[in-house]
Image 1: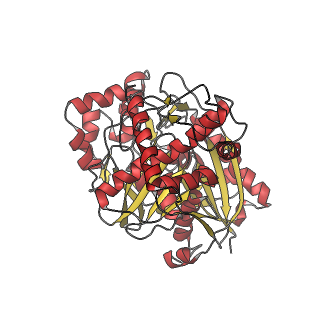
Image 2: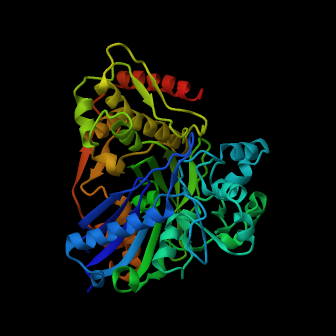
Image 3: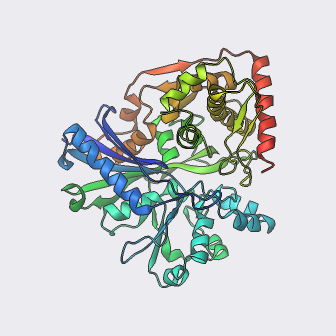
Length: 493
């Protein structure tokens, strides 16, 4: 009997690897940060080779930490930062340029052109998405237009496109498998979420050759085999999902109406909407939650571009804190922000505003404003953005109940209490906040028989903490009004 499922969790700022036991507990975790590249205003890139090398190093690191070998692993599950776009030479394996990250806004002008042509409904009806630089489609178009020779090589069948999952699968299988799962495909703005295929009409409009696209497979099933040269023996790859969908599955949001919020680099509120896609009229996205066998589960999603990344900004760019854990203590050292608000629209605003030209602002500064006030305002901004998304979701589907939380920043008690206060509802935080990684592990483990079925997964226990609101309705209303004013300033660009 194999002991573990290996989850590869390739995130925006770090690559993580987690070994999960049959009990659902993490036996070990290894995390490696990698380089963020900012070549221009609002532009964000990664080195695709460094993405792979850091992910491989994390996987080998967790095996070493646990004293485990590849022989102990039943299967690999992959979860990844979504929408980030990589194009590479299919013969040499060499990327044609740096990966264009989901946060990158360089294609705002391309998107604006399509909007002016009145194509919003065209894209929305087919893909469930809004026209925005966030998604992969216009990033591919930009590479085809701006990287010398790539269009010609693509038309000759020499170039492949993939989101990060496809890149990892291709590398791990020694170039034998070029695939993506349905959740990642649904984030490209090229995939028809109703017919469940790449949309030829969209491809024609954007001038994207279909030959560069990966095969779309279920989120749980036989995807490929990791070559023995990687870990010393062959290991099946049987699970794959974009990070937010993996977290929805990892939080066991198996029933229609279940909601989770992930606090990672960005913030992502997702609701399971069952077997039918739910349309939004308030700036939310309709997406695929997961696919097991031939059964597709859909989700409604609100995306915040900058959540935990604002804490990294406090640490790395401002030098206000030396570690993320310090932020909560510093925030609690003052009674309030003293009227200071931060809107971290560093790469525009996501749901429900969708303003790619918005930029970050700090408002309400006085002579008495200090480091602690600004740190507290940054943490509160994460909660305010979530409140905006939740309000939009409730406009679409009615009042939501308890919200399950996960992701790195959910470990911050100050933030979770403020989130509960500003939403006016209960927050549940599981003991294990590795929901993204365990979601990938569950999908892989179901396919290879490591877990017998959904009932066994749901039965896996674990303790949790509850945060309940203590803020008065009057205070909540005043704080949200101040936030709205600050957002209006940010939207002026």
